[in-house]
Image (tube, rainbow, N blue to C red):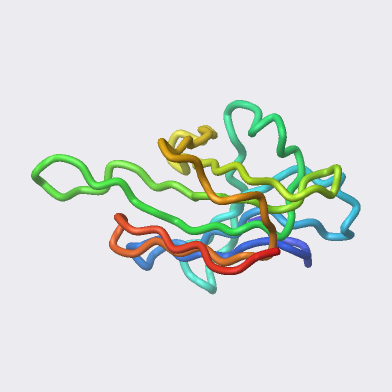
Length: 145
């Protein structure tokens, strides 16, 4: 398996089913030259595996640190089965060391990035904040600078 390196400004989240850990982003040397990497483990004792996107990531985010992220599932149909697993990423610091105010979803099953837009605008750019999703319906973004 893949062992993630020591990194600064990454994010670790657990999937809502409690069966997967998702480690996203960060930078091992604060050089902003490391590409965004997502790794996944089924349990704390199983090997990590890289989850590489099938297409390039968000163009404004070749590297990203100090962002907020959470994991959400999309449940569809009447059977209540999971239809998708997404890592939601907001804000952070980009390669130019400026705060970012964009929100993206990474589909962990299809391995594709998608930028999310909000009808009434989103929060202002920030980094070092926290993000959580409650019951897959409510989003709480807290703090940041």
